[in-house]
Length: 441
Image (cartoon, rainbow, N blue to C red; front, top):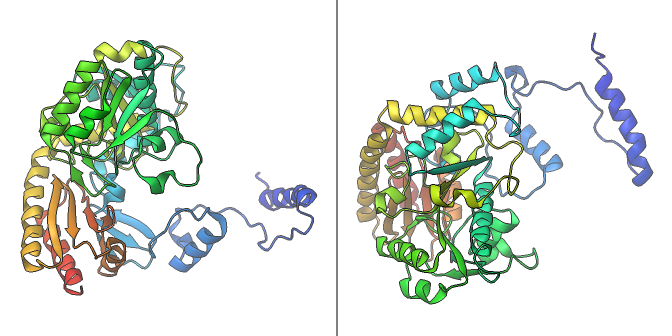
């Protein structure tokens, strides 16, 4: 039989070890039997959760004052059972809504079989997902990982190895001002925001930032030493700012001219959010590298890089890898996301819902012309640009008080990323709450 006091004994032994390094250490919390966090009878109050968070977690997030206990479709419910309309989707992650039955069945079924075996072995779920990703994109090969930043790190390495195979000085990468590509060191370097760089010392050499949609600046920056250009077709953190078609076409032309790789970071815009599987498909400009994550797993952590067939051999065996990347659970769920989108005609649904939502936001713009400057974005990734002197961050908190979950993108832009399955009646309810919010300004 398990020792019911094992946890307490472990805590006592650990205390003795700690005192060797911290002589004044005294434990304030008595070790207790570990409970299952998902048992309903163990559901904590918000205040209990907040206290544990502030005591034991690194305080590197500016959290909103709510803890969600469960969700359903377009809705979230907090620890007090109050309902919220979710128009953020975990920052474009829970693309098919909360507690989606098909995804639950897929992960339960796979969990009964095998979770993880590593990339030392073949994996049916991984192989099927890779095939599906190629079929909805272009001929190429897939690298599976766990997040968007990992996908962009893989892309960075591929661009560099492509350049280094040609000459030693060909390692420059062009990125955009106000871009966001992740928090690991390489992806952070690709990110064109000083506030993300601050405090970490020298970044990776060779990354040059140019303004979005500035063709002249892009042309001036690209030369024989450039190995790649990385662009978000719609800047997310940079204000939900879509790229102009001519700008993307010029990036494609320059990469072809100087033998560089064009990478589209579609971590936020991918998997149907713009009404196509990927935003580049709306522009008609084909990349050499495509990175994705967020909506790919519908809430389960998984990322991927797709590289065009002709460049795939450049990242050879042993040059890159991931222990958890493409594990059976993640691959099974991501495959189910694609199957769901195909089976339910989700892309057309997104187009209809996006048109309905945009029309509603434009009515609000007409109603509040001194507050709302612009409605921009694509599909169900939408930014409401406010007057320059209005900060978005406080409004996100006020929206939460209205039981509406939204985000921000930059100083004065409210960001909306509702689930792809959002219904018109839910959009109406969200617009009503947003109107009340704007009326307070």
